[in-house]
Length: 113
Image (cartoon, rainbow, N blue to C red; front, side, top):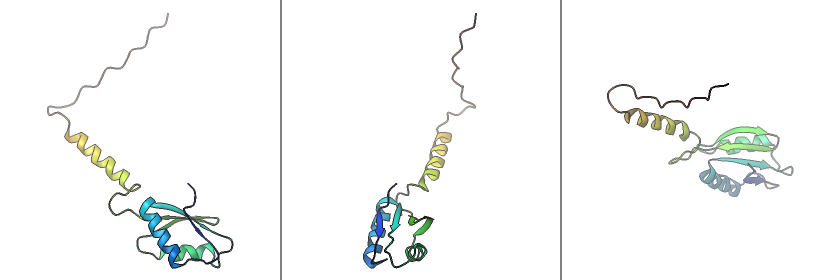
């Protein structure tokens, strides 16, 4: 995964916040790279981005910040667990009444001589 947003010598501006918000709406999980010429340190940038509504800083590694914001309609990461539960519930409801289902037979191995 490569950085989607880069923060340069102007620091965290309103345009950067707007770009991060749009990228989070598109991707839900993004990397932000803090350039060496940025006037703020990486923790200051992370605090500023974390202050936005719904945004969570997941990890800071070097000069890269990993940010997550849950998608309101179709979450990709949290939705997998809920999707698995729905599928399990649907499979359980689809079982025929009357007890256990028969297992398919296993293929047999050829006998050794």
